[in-house]
Amino acid sequence: MREEIKNFSDIERLNELAKFCSSIPFGSRTLDYYSSENWPRPWEILYYGSFCTSSISLLMFYTLTLLPDPTHVDLILVEDDDGVYLLPLIDNQFVLNYELGKVNNYSEIQGSLKILQTYPKEQIKNIT
Image (cartoon, rainbow, N blue to C red; front, side, top):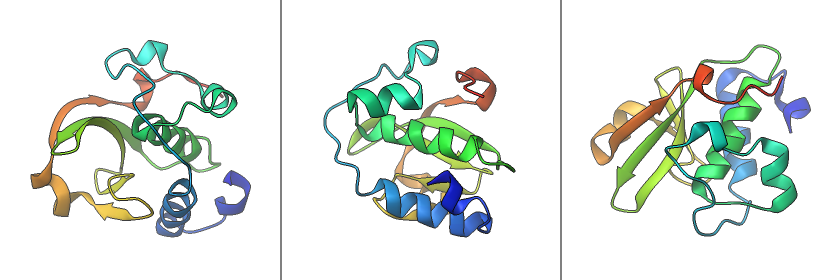
C-alpha cells in the first residue's frame, strides 16, 4: 500500500488509504487507548488480526508516518455517540476513519465529537 501511494498527492494518499482500510473487517476494542507505550506495532496488529476502529487508525497513522515525505499526523482519542476511539488527524485539517472509506474535513466534524486526548507522533512507538 505504501509503495502504491508514495508518489500520490497528499489528498490522493488520504483517499486511497481511507478506501483501502475501509475493507478491513473490525470488531471490538483490541487496545488500551490510554497506554500508548503498550500499543502494538503495525506488524503485530496484522499478524494477530487485532482489528478494531482504534487499531485500524493506528495502522493508518503508521502508514502515513512511514512514507518518504510524511505529513504531520497525530492520533486523537475522541468520544461521540458511537463511543471512544482513536482517529488520525492530518495537518490539523483532515480526519481518517471517522466514516469508512472517507476523508473528513476536521472543521466539518469537530462539533460532532469531543477530543479526550491527543497523541503526537513523538508519543507513539517509533518503528523506523
